[in-house]
Length: 384
Image (cartoon, rainbow, N blue to C red; front, side, top):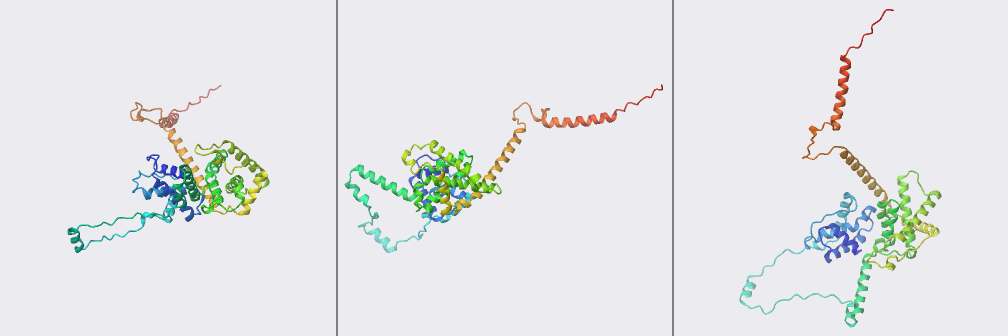
């Protein structure tokens, strides 16, 4: 999660180097964790930009104190939805820098000023640094060997990070992206991942259902299935779940899942076993059981599932905009382009489309006038 936060911060500040201030990264991670608690129910399209919006808020709050470069937001969702999400999160997330302070300046009395000028200062008040209560690990660190102390601190740091972010399995997101890319549904990958994350870590905490511990792969396949069926029911009138549509889609999903397990590459910073923890190969009966489990637990009641309609509407709007852009580009490409310093100018281009059309109209008009001006040949009758 820290790496994803850093990538979001770097995308907000393209001119900044790779070494981000620790205070900025820590604030962005803290805002993200607080947002999952204070705004746990977001729409699917808003859930996609939650992390990006928290990073943007962190940059705005620390840009003065850290002297950050200009911030250039490029949100992963439409600007109208992102601006609404940013304003909502900025309003509910606490800002420590806005704590009011007393603006009253105390002026020493005349008597104190005179004594200060004539009497030497005997002692000065020193600020006593505050120290928190040391933890058990910090107290015992001095009595341990360096290697054991370092490993204990590293384990504690990882434990704190894990409890703060509650990350889902690292293979889930690339597997979902691979499946959506192979089925030409790339824009639905964030929605499917949001549904899986909503089920595995509701409200930022690990789910208490014991079935999810050993059936994460089954859950991924089932969530993919329900999203695809939801899309079909919206885009196709009368499309529902029946035996004829269920069996082919199940076969396709199992094939995509097995293909993703073989082709998804493990990142260089991840270990093979740690990356694929929780992955297993599933069969048709496992898929059927997962679909029944999702229906039984009512895991499709979140905003991420209800927001699929908004995601499809935004996709259609983007497709229409792209079509209009392509038509405009084709229209511009059909027009002749000339440079200002070219020898052939418009007034001298007699073979342009406009000149050809004008000539054709002039020719037809002149031929018509000639035909009307020339008298018809009179027929001479010859007596036999």
